[in-house]
Image (cartoon, rainbow over all chains, first blue to last red; front, side):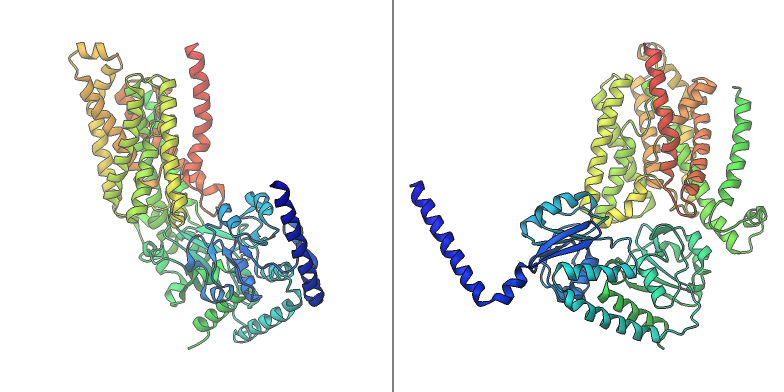
Length: 311
Length: 326
């Protein structure tokens, strides 16, 4: 009985491989591309990737922005089980995806059940599980959480190489730079106002320093983030905010109930230049702070022009 | 050390702590600003920083320090065990669990209801440890039971935080113990509450001393030992729940302060309670100052500063305890 089975299996294998060979002969060009092995250099070293990945799992929303910019779909995204964190512009491009849990505590079982052929991860956030991830599929990492705007552009190039779209990426980046330039032209050259971006939640006021993603993007536009600090994200007391006394504030929110409710009656808050001049703007935290990519940065630039330079 | 010396040192350190607490922060403040903010308020930025941020923190740190130190001294007096403290008796973690649970379920912020929730949690932790110990409050038994319950309750708290990532962001800072939500509104009620509870504790201070002679002697002197024990334990748990609801579970204060006081001034309960209250206030005031300096000008939770002082002392105490038993 066993012998018969093994004969049948062998025959099937041979038949399939012959069939495969026939197809290959017909579409030689396509298969050559499929077999191509690329060495992708990334934050975690070098990884060999064969062909065009079709089932991609993304463990940091900022990298989903890069995928969307390259017009590539994702099968899974770590969205903290909160679909609102992925903005519509990205959702429309990456298609229907399965949530693989929190970015901080990735659900490895779910990742592996999606049978990915490529995993995109954040070098710091998922550092502890990188070994496990590599066992599931080739894993390409980017230092996105601490990176600035320039690093986010580099990340797009790395991811383009990983998904086999290196030939398209220059064009995509050129288009992006042009649209950012268009926004930049609407900002006066002599703009002196300081602009403090901060995520505000119930627990606190988390200001983004000048080298954070938003801080460095403001700098790219010719604007100034007044917060200098070692860390990208800093919890500030109301006193520290009063000491910085920014001219403009963009408060990135994803919930209605924030610490500003407690602060708004404090004379220190009322005395802020931004508050007196009515230059405190509430903006979408998913767009400004979470996505950190080509698509979202164009959205940030648009928000800034609309709030500060349009009457 | 004489009591008068202790009081003088306390007053000097309190004044110095007040000046430091008012002067340290991102906004530069002069002595004149401190004077003006209290006696001649004109509404400058520096004066507002003192009145709306630094003074409330100073006052809150006193409330929290006094509550925890008094709670610790009562727990140690009741159990005849120098290791007993809000943390080790499961009260801190019980109160923290209940407060986190109520934030998770109701998102609530009402100060009175949170105090009640904190008290119920402290009660839960205390009752479990009490039940596990039975009548035997020997250091080893209490440490093992208390620490197990502490771990159990903390792990449930962490479970809730992990399940709900939105709660996570809001609670982590608080869970280490933090004074950054201090407000002047309602501060006077905190002081009234604290004052009443401490008066109740002091009124029966003598009874605690009689208890320390052992249950049999106390009974033969006509004391209702069970009643005294229950009332005092409730007071200690009430103080713990109260402090946790205000600032999160600040560790080590209730352990360290009463032990130092007993070492310096002897172990008459009434005095231990009074001087622990003073010492607890000082420890929290200075811990708050240190916590502002650790990553200046950004904030560090005050619980980290008290742990920096408390943990080495705790280890030293354990080592010393070993020797005296051998």
